[in-house]
Length: 115
Image 1 (cartoon, rainbow, N blue to C red):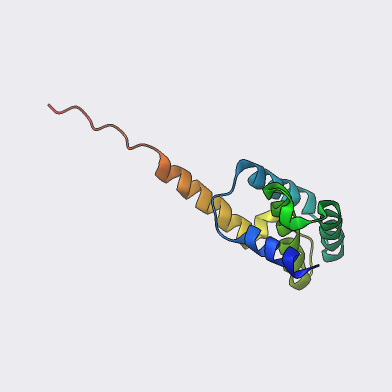
Image 2 (image 1 turned 60 degrees about the vertical axis):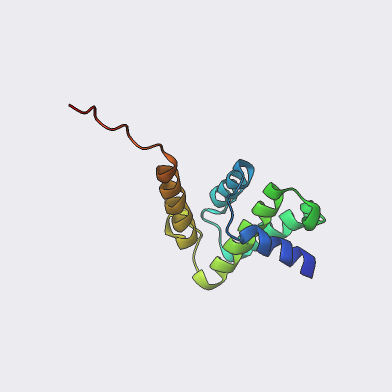
């Protein structure tokens, strides 16, 4: 992988408000990765990188997909077992943060009438 591709993957993992296409791409990767061992995730990452070609000019969803495969591959390198989103601390943290963010964006409840 080139330095430019590495930079693009790192940028895709930086905290930001992801677009719906990025969220969906990561969800698809996690669904597909469930039960995979390291070598299977590594093969999936290599396939995505080959299909993407120039990752720097790929759309955000493709970069998110490649970044998620890279993250999962790294996780499985030390994990030694199959991938499971339910035990992935990064995924659980993201889901919790999204839930909290959604809760904060709700308008406040109206005050009860005075009287």
